[in-house]
Image (tube, rainbow, N blue to C red; front, side, top):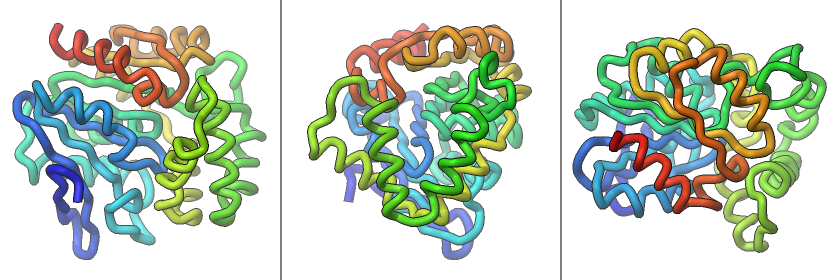
Length: 272
């Protein structure tokens, strides 16, 4: 069991695993598609010295219950609200990474920003898919995204192949050691391929542009973007979340590869 590990029941038969350590103003970290609390271990180590740090395994991820229903970001927003309520968190900073950003925006859609102190969105567009991929900030051209869904999420072997390629080409800039790559891939495979496919589609078809603007208008907001698409992404953020601060750092997993720089950026932001 992790330090501070506990389970929170969000509905009959469904428990969400959280790591809850430290004291002070709460920061809630939300991992992306199929990833787990483990990915934020360097942030837990750093921020627990000054803050209460809560990290969530969303449903069907990591140590949380694997379910056949609710594998979408509307339900993840509901689950997040129940975790925040159960832990009696007030004046929260939400840090969503990748599809974890969708969970934060969905929470805002359902609950507004009254219990939010600040927001950090790590490397995801509020509209991940568009036919205008040459101008909008999207995950990729429509045909490529369709191919991932129809080809690479049909069984566990293909899921492993996809995550391996994504980790190597997009998530990390340096060459990964074999044990590091295995660690990344094994996190993802804790979510069954049929659930991963559902989450992938739910995320790709999401549109949170209204919530992105509302968030940046109402509370301090920071968007951290990977270097490989920074120019396109910065323009999109400036259009749809005009009051958000913007930082550019590393690849998609920059908070793991460049943890000291990432932690400094977030620390400066939440202390401002």
